[in-house]
Length: 325
Image (cartoon, rainbow, N blue to C red; front, side):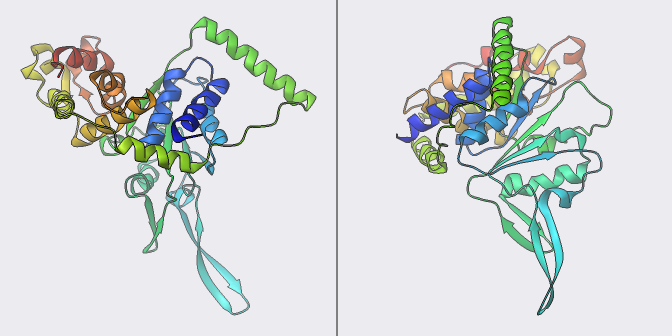
């Protein structure tokens, strides 16, 4: 199979485990192909962790889960120097932390204090960790997928804007419709029955990492017209100068998207076009992912909150007002 067929097979296998979250699965795959880190937010029990595990299970990759808690230390994430006593004397050796994996699940990232959250910054951005003055490189395939719960405030530490901006996309997981909920019940029941009986079919061969690297090479070659570059830049600029579009947007937006937003739009739009089997980007690709790219980069004002506006509604208003190429 070529890279496209292998990535499509990865999506299909994830869909067999995660019922009714097709958009979420696609966003996870886009993040993998775009070589970016994802922030996944949703209420408890919506299969955020299960979705990430489903990707690692079907991909030839090392998986690591870090459960963030208020007493977690930076060394618990990055690793530390440990003294070893041998026949020829003692020496310090670096023991790698759980961050050294291909797919890292940072579960409930907002439950750890700022110093632990900051420990992820270098790994996420520079793909390396520095401990005791020595730099340790991350593996070639490396992605952090962090989850957070939006409803609990006790014992949580909101992520600072600087770290939020380092995530490629902010993916929201919503309640599934009732038809999908029925399928979820049947799926879990079948898994329990299979575990009790000791049966179950043999697991298919994992998708090799090389398929991801081949797909990234093809995505890098996708054509993006000058008009599309300007369209993406106009969308980002609209978040910074909303008064040029409407008075309401000027009242609602406090902080606009950074240049990382432009780069993320380009990467995600090309990955979205590739998944659709096209070798060029059109406005539909940008509009499909713009909410996920802007959701954590656009800060709303108190007036927007008073008017009952959500970030997605404000982004939709921007998309409606910015002219198509």
